[in-house]
Every structure is written in C-alpha cells, then in structure tokens.
Length: 219
Image (cartoon, rainbow, N blue to C red; front, side, top):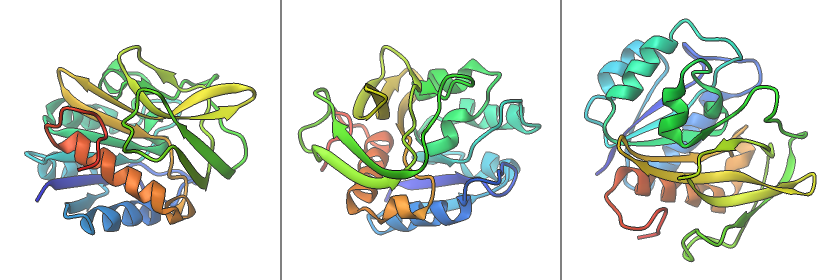
C-alpha cells in the first residue's frame, strides 16, 4: 500500500475562495478507495514529521502574491521529500518568491498573466504525448486556468481552449528530485463529481508514487 500525506489548505494556508477541507476530503476518499493510505495535515509543523518517508506528497493549498510566513518551513519539507509529488489546483501559486517549487513542479501560476474565466463547464482534451490509456476528453465543472507557465521538459497530458489558445491544465515531470504531477482542476467538490476527474487523480497519484516507465499510465 502506498502511503500518501495530503497537505491541505484551511490551516496554516487558507484563503476565502477555496473550500480546501472539502476538496481534500474528496481527494483523500478517492485515493483510499484505490488502495492508498492517506494522512491529511493542515499545519506545516505536522507535515514536516508525517511526510518523512511518504511515497507521495499531495499539496492542495495555495499562496498569495506575497510570501507566506511559513513558506521557508514548507520549502524545507518539499526539498527534503524524496517521494512523488502531486499538486492540485491553486497549489501552483505557492512559494511565489522561490524557484524551487516551480522547478520541482514543472510550472506555476504567474501573477499578472495567469488567470481563469468564471467557473463553469470545462472540457479537457488529451494531448498527443499523453498515454493512449487516458480518456480523450474529460468534461467537468471548474475554473479554466489559462496561461500557466510550463517548463520545456514538462509533459502536458491535457489542455483546455480559452480565448482561441490551448492552455496546459494537467502535466507530469520527472526530474532529479523525483516525479511530480499537477492538475489545475479542483476548485470545489463539484469538480470531483466527474468520474473521469477522480480517475485522473488516481492515475497521477499512482504514477508519481511509483517507478513506472510511462507517465500517467493506467495499471
């Protein structure tokens, strides 16, 4: 059984826009149903202890435009973590004054450029570099993150179209620090009503926490 630690907003990291406790519960329940052991923590001090030796660190929390008082401590946990990483939705905004997060994640939210239109129906299209085992199309209700910055060595799995342009929404990256996966989905629990979205979370978690040969491949 793979052991995952889920760092959720709503404790040290909180904002008025995201129901972190609800979305984290949905993610944890989904992964537990697929054989993962999931320990949810809200405080960085608890995370530092419980993430040690975990197969997977899941981050479902976000940061503002300025540094958070606990950013240094959170950075230390991420730097020390040697297992897989799965970041969700607004987690791409974390550690705004530190390059480590972007390097590990393979991309990030860029203040002043990245945005999203009003929450609503959202269609994701599988890319040509994604595993053929993944659904060609995923439909959900969510925020359409647009103009995220993505590194050249990041493999984009799904895109969405906005303002006549394709935008990366789901990606994976394998680097010296380990495997990382990101899904911009998950603003609220309705985003996880879609079976395809829940299945995608499981696929990303399995890939990030294992030593597979193909990214996000179903097994």
